[in-house]
Amino acid sequence: MRLALAQITADLDPAPNLGTVRDLTRRAADAGARLVVFPESTMARFGAPLAEVAEPLDGPWATAVRGIAEETGTVVVVGMFTPAPGGRVANTLLATGPGVDASYDKIHLYDAFGFTESEQVAPGSEVVTIDVDGVRVGLATCYDVRFPELFRAHADAGAVLSLLPASWGPGPGKVEQWQLLLRARALDATVWLAAADQAAPAPSEPETTAPVGVGHSALVGPDGTVRDSLGAEPGLLVTDVGVDEVEAVRRKVSVLANRRL
Image 1: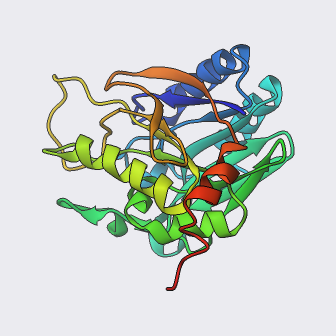
Image 2: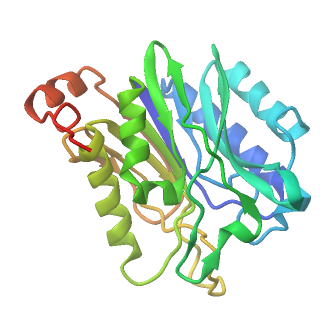
């Protein structure tokens, strides 16, 4: 499977972000990608008034993304915000394209490193997988990567690839933690892991505790090796996933079969 990781810097306004989704999806499709993955909060970056920008999954922003996926013949996975009870929102991944129309609400909220996502965001509760060209794919978001049980749940559901859109909070050691956790989660579940992070903010941007991204989007193999990656700047990474490799790795490293807890 050929996929693309779109490492962008999202705006506070959903309109220009939709244009970015359109442009990069077209570029990815022209390069042969069947699956295009955008970061968490692509609709509007953290720092925007989330309750004001949130839209339902049948609203105009999500409908426009469905049109982009249909136009390009690709499956697009993109982070957005949807309304939730009590004035909060859900941190939602929309997955849409040929044969796919699904969503995942982020389960583990980023109440860490001086940021409290749960003040504005309600947690999800459902493990979600999709099928792309006959390949089972699990969905996760950013802080989820610190919780290996979700990725094992993907594998238990038949997934050979997990997607991780993110807006990773910057700070001392955070790039190293990001890279380590990506490799660890791929090894824990013996799955491919494709992580699309927001690009790092420009040096001129004011410091914030909001998770705005560090870049370093990457594709990690089921043996924990990094197969392809970007740096901190915006970019489009088009890369290939050898889905048959998962079975071979699981025969050698039977961590799923050997679990006792």
